[in-house]
Image (cartoon, rainbow, N blue to C red; front, side):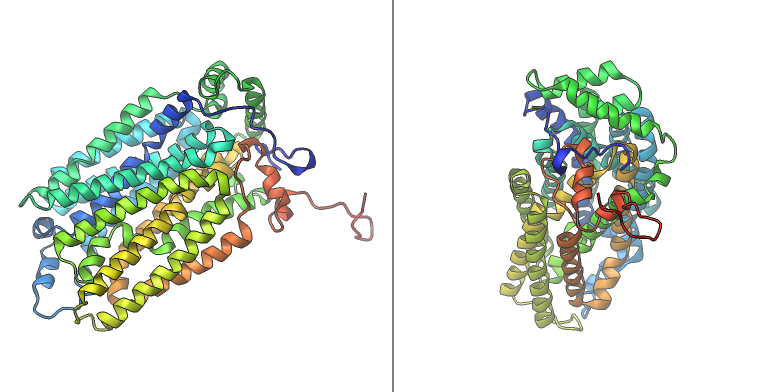
Length: 515
């Protein structure tokens, strides 16, 4: 096993060095987790702004003409390649930035990368608020994407490296908590801004500068992580940072020694982290870095996160009612992210994944059945009010299940599973896969809804079934395991142990030798 994972006697994880929850670690992690605000705000703003008539009139008049048609296919009203390009361009930029951030964090640290992410997001908010044409909108979106790519790469790893092992899941879930807060704030902003004629959309886009300011201030006030400081040779600063967050009762020297061992092992392979992650012993890490964020997007959360106003209008709600439905969704998601924080370190990651997956499957199949029965295949029928409310209720239950499972855990798992020598590269790949999948799905969802109709939701339900089975078979439980002892988890897994353990020695005729 490469450096960064240390199996211990009897195969059990090592102790957590006596670190508890201190005021300093809470404040530090909250400031780092606030990086989720900018991602959440953008997710909420994008869907709401694209449902505002003043915004569509200024930039996408073709969509308004289809909405005004006397007979129209409800599934296809918003099917515009330019409209989806506005939404998805951010994620292409974020993909490139997240890969670049994997190298940058090793050179300048996680704190500096979060600071750069906040500054770029602030600039993107200013450009979008002042936009007078589609080109300015897309430039602004790309700046936002660069900011999100940097922040999403650095903040979850910062949290995983700073939090005590016993409560690492709860602290890392804080990123999703702030993402949900940002999303709810954006939904409330959209609901109010939609009542401002002609320029309400500028207010929604421009207020993205507020969460950007929060992460800028937060990044200025927190130290870098001990692991990141040790990688750059700053031993005393690393000791001081660890003592600050662990408190007086913790065995800081023992933890620092273990982290130093992992860092020294990483220095033996100083170059080529992206190449090393392809090595056989890192096969489980690479598989999870790709599968977990990809599966998160294939839950169909893209429908809820970006296009819920479109979905609710398709289901028969008016413009203002659809925006209020999105506010309700945001509140539900926030509430159940808190449930995840309270349970992830008590019951573990796997049980949250599995229960959330099962409920999401049921909700999506039910939504497909209602829309198929009410709107029909041609999309020209109107949905009865009671069924519209049922779609909203089922979507809320879906959002709740996502809020306690795939939402927060997609940031927890990649942040905690990598050895230190590939941690930045692994998190960069994970974020790139997440943003790349988001780009593809935002670019194609409206066309898919127009073509597949209500079967779109069956498509996503099928993927949720596949990924729930994947978690059941291949994801080991990681709750409470120190980062430096994570190798023992993979070494005990029924499938992954064949990659992380050396093959058993054989005699001259090929028989396995038994000690």
